[in-house]
Image 1 (cartoon, helix red, strand yellow):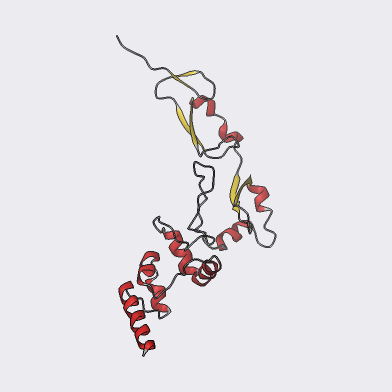
Image 2 (cartoon, one colour; image 1 turned 120 degrees about the vertical axis):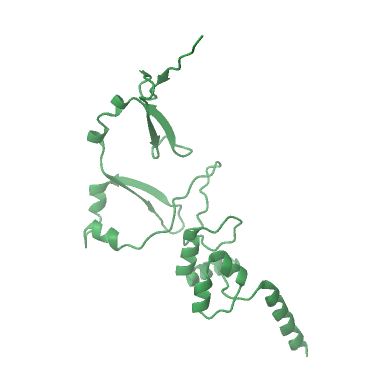
Length: 198
């Protein structure tokens, strides 16, 4: 005895023929609480989406002391915010951002984005990504000021382990910081202590 699988549209509940379902990934919607979701629909149910679609822009706003907030608005309204030069000129002249949107953890808390100026260089167990390395290379002094004010260890260009972790070999060479292995640092510090005792 054979079996037949019947597929339904998530939008209308109507039966849809084999191979006719279209997958839709919803990435932004007020009802989303735990990331993007997939729904399926018949192609005919999506026939006029191009006519109803509007051009939008999405961006994050970072205010001091606040969590980043995502804003989605019509493209035409966003373009009106630029009053000196047209928005396309402003966008093309803007520096590249290495900040990635913060993803929510299962607890609902925002994940720490070490690829942002706010968190780059903080000690963490995870892999150091290219965005974090770039932020530290471009803003080392600013990162160290923040780390110092937070009571955390600094990004020391004379520390071979830190230089290797953050890919700072070129910057260390430019600034003339001689990175030495940790064992040599301990030996050097011990020798200095011995000399000061004499």
